[in-house]
Length: 243
Image (cartoon, rainbow, N blue to C red):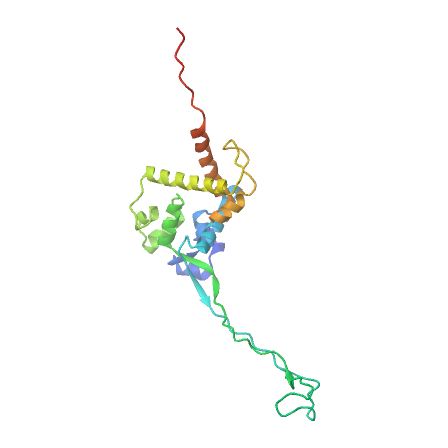
C-alpha cells in the first residue's frame, strides 16, 4: 500500500488491509504506477474505468450506501396585495375571487433513494472477476488476498467452479473475443479485411455497451478477426502432376 499512497488515506494506511477496496484502489494495486511508463499508466486508468463500469452493470458484485434525502422546505405563502381586511370574505377569498394568501405548498411526492459513491468490492468477488477477464492478480492484489484469507485457488478461478485448465481458459477467451466481433458485425460496422487494419468508427460505442475500455475491446476484436480471416482464406488445392 505504501507504493500507491495517494490512493489511500492515512487512516487506511494505519488500519492495514481492509475487507473491501474501492474500484480505483483495485486498479492502482493491480496496475501500479511506474515512473516513465506512460502506456502502463494509461492502462491503469482505463482498467479503473472498466472496474467501475463492471460495478455499474452488475457484472462485479459490490456494496454501496444509499440514503433518502430530506424533503425540501416549502416556501412561505405570500400575502395577496388585494386581500385587505375589508375586502376579505369569511371563506378566505376576496370579493373578486382571488385567495387571500397565495404561494406554494409541498407536493408530498416520495423522495427517491440516492446511491452514495464509491463502490466497495470484496477480495473474493474481485478474484472471480479477474479470472473472468483472463488476468492473474498482481503481487499487491495477491498480498491482499492472503491478508484477508482468500485462498489462492479462488484468486485463479471463482470458488463455485473448479480451477480451469490452460486449454479451457484459452477456449473461454476465444469465445469472448468472437462474441465481441459479433457485436461489431451486428452493429453494422464495416470491418477491415486485415486484423491489423484500422478499426471502424463506432467501435468505441460498442465497447462502451460491452462495459469495457475501447483498448481492451479492440484487442479482442482483432484477435477474433484474425482467426475469422484465416478460417475463410481459400485453401490451396493439390493438383496431380501432369503425365
